Image (cartoon, one colour):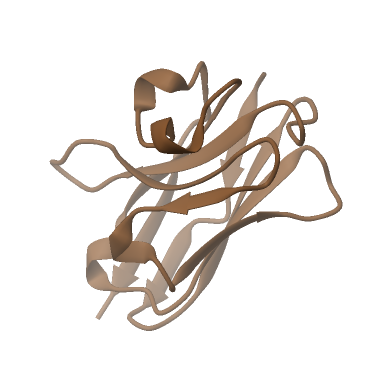
Length: 124
């Protein structure tokens, strides 16, 4: 599975962005998809994930502000980000894996496929 992340950019504090993760094959019903992010000088960390059956999981710092979802396109997963904060600045990566249970979504080793990152910069 090849993944293509896009949609990053520069936005002011409180603004919104929508990231897309386009897969080379359908992921609905097959793969879990997650978004991770890596701020400058820090390690990559889990942001949000959606399982093959549509269940979602978020890291607490984005709960209520970010939404991960699929629409009618079975190959694409979106991350809608609202009320962006300075600390959301990072390179965002999407990842895919099969057979991942909800409680394991935060484990990067569970994902076999990773896309390139897309930069999100939140400015004051």
